[in-house]
Image (cartoon, rainbow, N blue to C red):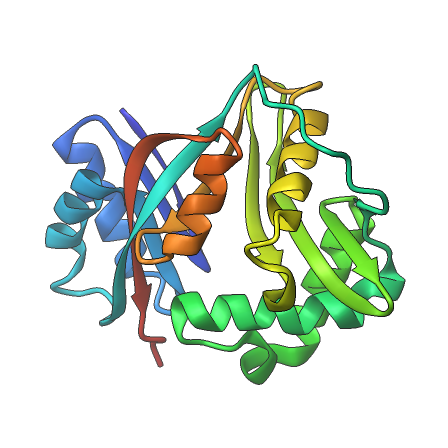
Length: 222
């Protein structure tokens, strides 16, 4: 009837009202969650059950699910787009932290520097981060959070501000998508509804809108 991940992040998918209510009751016992995420209409119903005894909301935001499948328009290749190494960690960390702060209002470097460093390093060691670095500057970054034969999910897509509107981000994102689609059926990403530049980038890269999701960032419990 449903499935939920309940912990630091709460992800919910349910087909019945009893399942949704049961998940909300379980989530109320997790008093140190950071966020709740799910399809927009579902999160609204979940919140009705969760709110009376759950953590207080901090930020509500709407995100758009974009998806890319073959065929993909070929573009000029980007030399140097590669998996990140631990030598790139100090370039990746502040960028990833800044993106998290912009989205959630919480800077993970301020909250848990050691843990955040370990998580970033682990993701790099697992081959989940792609970067383009020139002259010691991070020009492009993207993370593959999940990687299955059915779908690869991207997050943390970053283009250096000095190189935006010049086609570099589009070429990198397209090149990465083509590489990933050689081993999966689709590539997907969530983009904040208010981030018009990111929405335009994914549209130009051939991604299609597939759904709308709501995210509730939570106040930490005691």
